[in-house]
Image (cartoon, rainbow, N blue to C red):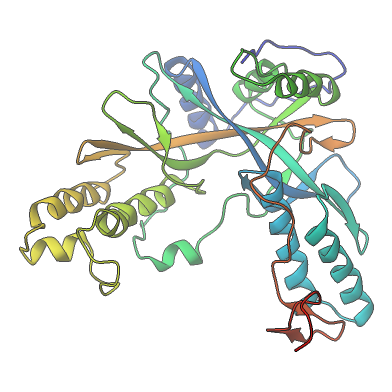
Length: 368
C-alpha cells in the first residue's frame, strides 16, 4: 500500500490543539503509538450504511455499523432495519408501503443507494487497518482508550452494551488534533499496490484516490487476533466498541466455546458448564480445561491484552478504519468489491396493515 500525502481537489483539515488534560494525554498517547507502530497492516474493506445529516452539512450519520465484510451484508442489514421500521414504527399504510417497497428492492437488487420517506441511505465503504511495530506485531489498546470504570464480565453485558458506531456522525469538517490531521493527510493517497491484487481491484483503488480525495478517520474499534507458532496474526472475532468488550468476547471463547469446539465439553452440556467449572470437576480433560480457564482468568486480572493457551497466542488488537470522501459524501462499494451471497428475502411477508404472514407457500410452488 502506498500512503503519500496529496492535497489535490481535497478539503482543508481543521486542526485544533488539545488543551484539556484528557485530550492532551490522548494526543501524547497517540504520538507514542505512532513512534512504536510505524507501519500499517491493511486488512481490507468493511461496509455499513449512512444517511446525510439533516442540517444540510457535509456530515453523515451511521445507521448500520461499518463492520460488515461485504456490500451485500450491509444491504441485508439495511433490509432488516427498514423491515422492522415498517413493522414497529410506521404511522400509516402509506409509510409502511414506502418502506416495504424499499425492502422489496433490497430483496432482489444490489442497491447501494436509495431514498425512503425523504431519507437517503447509502452503503458506505471503509478500509480497515492496524498499526504494527518493526516485528510485525499488531498494536494493542492504548492506555487512554475508553474503559468501563467497573468491568462487567457477565454474558448479558454484551447484549445490553453499546455497539460499534452507535450514534456516530461522520463529519469531515470537524476539527481534529495535530496527530489526527497528520494521519489523515498521510493516508489521502492510500491505494492498493502489488501483484497479489487483481487488476480491477488496483484500478478501482487508484480511481478512488481521484474521485474521493479526502479521508475521514473513524473511532478505533477492537478485536481478537490469534497466532500459532511463527504464523501470521489472523482475526478471531468481529469488531467490538471497547477493548473490554473484546476481552469479554475472548473470555467467553476461552472458557466456553473453545472447550466445546475441541470436544472437551459436550455441545449439549448445560450452558453454565465451562472450562472453569469442568476443570474443577477433575475429569479426564481437567488439565486441558484448566489451561483455558487460567488464560481466561488472566484476562480478568486487569487490563490484560494478551494470553496464551495450548500453543495459540490471543491478543486484543486496536483496529482503525478510514472512509474515503468525495464531493457527494462517503465512498460507496467499488465495482471490484465482492459479496458472498446474492440479495434475498430475509423476513416473512409484512402487509400494509402491519400483519406478519408466516409459513406462506412460495408463489412459484404449485397449488396442492
